[in-house]
Amino acid sequence: MATQPRHHQLLILSQHFETYQSLISHEKLPGLSLLAFHDPDQAIRAGADCDLLFGEPALVSQILNQLPNLAWVQTTWAGVDPLLAAGMRKDYRLTNARNVYGEMISQYVFGYLLMVERRILARWQAQQERRWDDSGHGNLKGKLIGLLGVGTIGSHLAATAHHFGMQVHGYTRQSETCPDVDEYFHGAELSRFAADLDYLACTLPGTTATRGLVNANFLAALPKKAWLVNTGRGSTVNETDLVEALRRGSLAGAVLDVFAEEPLPPDHPLWSTPNTFITFHSAARNYPPDIAALFVENYRLFIQGKPLLHQVDFELGY
Image (cartoon, rainbow, N blue to C red; front, side, top):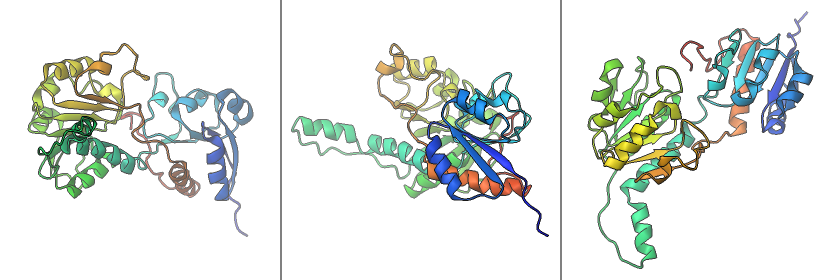
């Protein structure tokens, strides 16, 4: 006689709770019942007995310590900083959505790189002035991009860079698994990694080890021609040092999607810093079908007792 699968209760806590509930319910996963909310108070009142939790870390963190049966949390973000804060429990399995943002981040990063090389804003200004501007432009081919972090997003960036004929350098803690990185750097090689870069793309998670990594010393090691693009975590960059480097002209420019404080305060000097382009933590928005599919795949692994995809190491923070 076939053994019935153990019953699991999933609590969905997300601003997109209805969409996720529909997508996951459609899969008719064995042994799974669902509750879905966008309000943490409603969620904990109705779902305190749930053993599985799915949602945005900022919301999940508000009820995490109130779920006595919790076994596994699947987040809808790549970053899980709110779940790693002091006082947060770590007696469960935590998986993130680190493998669903590479394509969108690549579009963002290379959109701005092409804007710089092809002088798109200068062409637009010439058009407004009815001025024929047939001056030259740059080319990504042959340029050197440095990837500060070569996880799943960095690996996607490396492949895209090779598509444009760029050279790729990667700085990682120790791994060298991406075949599209031409040269790797580790540990004390940070300044050597920075030398000669045309572009620096930061995709690092927010951890104790990465906090303030891009500081005055690092920025001084970059050539004046370099552009910095940060889509990882605002805590990676010392913003005071970055503003000073841009104002001095010791850095060509910066494209910033993440900041130490979000929203960026109206009086922050970055708003008026030369050659700085600001977006609003919008480089890669969640695409619910992809994230729901990740949960479905992980749930099937979970009920089979197999390792889950993208499990977070609580000590490393990613």
